[in-house]
Structure formats: C-alpha cells, structure tokens
Image 1: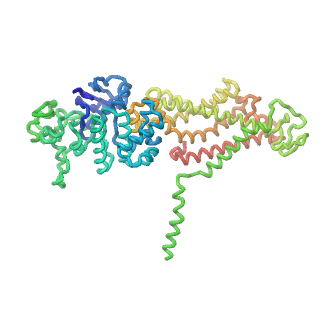
Image 2: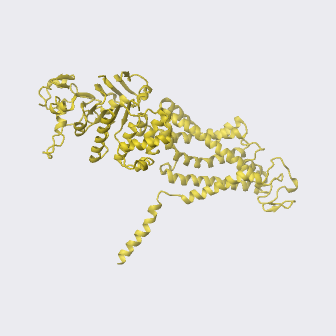
Image 3: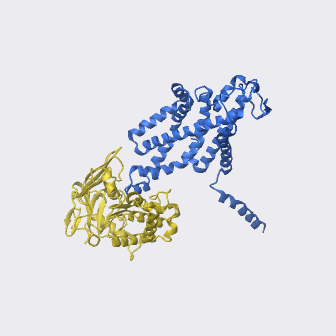
Length: 321
Length: 298
C-alpha cells in the first residue's frame, strides 16, 4: 500500500545569532491511510517542527532539506501554495492550545465552515446547517444555539471540539494533531482522544498524533515514532515498542509513566534535554544514558533493525527485554 | 447588629459599580457625539435653509454686529462681514467644506496607513525597513510645515488640501496597523486559518483587519480634530481652499484686519472651530479609555 505521507531524511535548520541550529536532523517515517502514528518526544525534540515542515508553517529563514511527499507530490523545495492546495481536502491540523487557535472575532459556526464557503462555494445558510451537523458529530451540546456563539463563550474542551469540527469540515485524509490534549484537563483529554479515535474509525482518516504523553499513545496509536534531539531513536508498532523497547530513552520514558500498583515510585530520566545549538557528540542521549560506553561518545548510532523494529543504539541488544 | 447592617450597606453600595464596569466615559462619548452631530446637521442642512452666495455683495448691511437687524428687517444672529454677507450662512457653508475635507483626508490617510502598515507588518523584511524609516523621517518634520510645503507646491484647491492633509496623517495609522499585524502574525488562529488552505489576503482580512478596528476608531477620533485645525490653518495662510469655497480658515483670515472694529468676523468662526476640535478630542480620549487603555499617551 502507498503511504499517504512519506517523510525521508528531513532536516530543518534555523539560522540564529549563535549559528545554525539543527532542529530536525534526518527524520524519516511514513503514515499509511487510516492508521494512527504517534510522534513522541520531549519539548525541543523536533516533533512539532517536523509537522510544521509538513504543513508549511515554518517561519521564514528555516532551511528545509530532504523529502516530504504527500500521495506522490513532493512538498520540499516547492512554493507553499502547493501545500496550501492540499490543505483542507487532504491535510488538516489541530493545535495544542484551543484557546488561541480560534479567531476571537468570528462566530464559531462560521469559522467551522469558512473553508466550505470559500473553497466549495457553499451558501451561508447551508453552511450553518452543516456547522450544526459537524458540531453534533464532535459532541458539542445544543449545537443550534452554540453555532452562533463566539469562542470566548466556549470552554477549553468545547473549543478543541470546535477545532476538530473545523478540521473535519472538508473531510481530510490525514489529520495532524499537535498535542491536542495538552491544554485540557485529564477527563476532557480522555473524551477528546475517544472522539478522535471514533472519527478516525468512521471516516477512515489517518491521524498523525504529536504528543509527549505515553499514556495517550498506548491507547490510540498503531505505530509510534520516538524522537530525541531532532532524530528518530526508535520506531515500530506501539505494542512491540512498549513490550520490547530497544533504546534506553524509550526505556526511561516507559519507566517514568506512573504505574497503578506503585504510584509513589517514579523513575525519571536524569539530566536535561540537550541544547540543540550544542548537541553532545556521538549519540545525543549518552550523557543521560546508563548504558553509555566509550563508543557512544564518539560514534553516532544509525537507525537499524535489531530483532523486530528499528532503533538507534549501539547496545540495543542489551536494552529492554 | 449595627455591624451587620453596616456590612449590608457596604455590599449594597459597592454592588452597582461592578455592573457598570466596562462602560467608562459614556457621558463623555454621548456629549461629544451630540456636539459633533449638531455640527454635522448644520453642515448638511444649514446651507439649504440659509442660501449663501459667495460673490453676493450687500454694502448697505456690511459690518452689522451680532443680533442686529438688516435693512430688510431680518435678524442676523452672528452679524455680517465687510461685504455684507451673513456670517451664520457663511459659517454653515464653511462647516460643510471643513468637515468634508476633514473626513475625506481622514479616510484617505487611514487607507494609506492601513495599506502601508500591513505591507510593513505582515510582509516585513526590507519593505518594513523602508516604510518605517519613511515614517520616521516624516515624523521628524513638524506636520504643519510639511503641509505648508506641499500645499505651496500643489496650489490651493479642495482636492489638494485633502491630499496634503492625508500625506501628513498616514504615519499614526500605519504604525498602529503594523503593530497589530506583528501581534497577530504569530497567533495560533492564524496558523489554524492557514492550514485550512487560506491565502495571505484572506488571513489578513479575517485576522489582522478586525484587530485594527478599535485602535483605528480611537485614532480617527483623535486625529480628525487635528485635520480640521490643520485645514483651517492652511486656509488662514491662503494655502487651503480658494476664496470661492469659504472654509472657517478663510473666514477667520478675512476678519483679521477688522479685529478692533468688527471682532465677530474672526472670533465667532474661531470659537465654532475650537468647540468642534475640543469635542473630537474628548470623543477620542473617551473612546481610547473604553477600547484601548494601553494606547494612552500616544
């Protein structure tokens, strides 16, 4: 099967006052139709920048190289209008903070169907009905009333639902969700994730989920891509990665998830994520790694398959179980 | 017992102001709008009721004091000038000219400011540097001096006055628009609009322009007083409207030589002008306090 989105050796560099900073360094992954791929990493690991590169949202001055193809169309090195033409019908995105991702001066219903009116020539009255339908689908109560309200009259969870309705309006094939539940409280998080899962099932849409919450990943994702310091450190089917992790970073992340049985003992990963302007030599994770050997300081491990799925560690044989 | 009743009193007296919050300056806004509306009505309907002929001469009724009667027995409320023209009719005609020029110049400078501000703030880069340095250079000149210079080059006519005044007024609008564009540019809802496939113009229209609305209203009200005053100054100096279209500035200038004998020719239009400018100033301040307290002091 052809992947919807194919990212190969993607590199994103930013020119700053302190020299060029590499935010994403040789990232490759695929998203196939109908599947959920989770891209997991700490702040600064390059997961959001990767998706911004896909959506053409990077600030001017960012240097992008490598290849991003959407259904065979190359997006890197082409004008942003090529990406914009795919937006809506093919690609859609929802953001971390639903509070600031709705335009405060327009009614919610109008924003949800703006793309339909603008790009499909739908009439305002028909669009309003469609907005009510979409709002019903994403579980906003009393949609006939709320369709004419402004974003400030919505709660955080309702705003994220409205954002999802907005992204769904054009029935995209791939929805990119950039930490969709980070700004919401835990019960609402679960509701939103359930909503995304059910919509994915009914529409057959693919979902690229950017998150740092491994709990979310375990429930929702078919495949997982773990990123550290701008590189992919481990990738594979969620289940396999969770049960037989092959990278010390993944192991550390899994160990720092609260366990029902043993709530008092969390094992954190020691140290801080590295400054992308001055990455450690060799494997970027070695200063924080308890498996680190001399070779890790000098030689950067490539992403290679060691029984099962790809990981980037010299000692992947000894990691996990 | 007394303590509880005292407490009840405080609760009662403090409750209503909380409800009135966010409605600052209502009295000032309504009051100044009433003055402006009165002028607008005079400008619109005055010249229809009191026909004014700029070339008519009535030597029998020249230099009549306010509240006196003409030889035909009509009351002249504001007196007559040195060629026997009724000052009230002349001022209403002048109000029409002055306010038309003021509003046109305001709209034109607002439009120029909006376009330049969006170009500078949204697209940035060298265009931003060029436009903002241009604005800085212009701000280094005293506004009226620049207006006199351009007016002297273009010559007196209503159209030229509008052009001159808009050139000297665009900077404030451009700066505010640029600020709003910069502030909006990196908001998440702009990205959210973009990923639905919106093009630049659509994003500017739906995200930047609405955020300019309140500051524009405030600046417009503060600025229009200046524009009307500047128009009067130019006309007073003979660089504004030609004598056949009497604005307040030309009327005031016309009475300058007769100040000791017929004070009303200059004084009454001057007072009328001052009242209107003050009304706009009050309106602008009140709108600023209501919509954008952060703009104070600009």
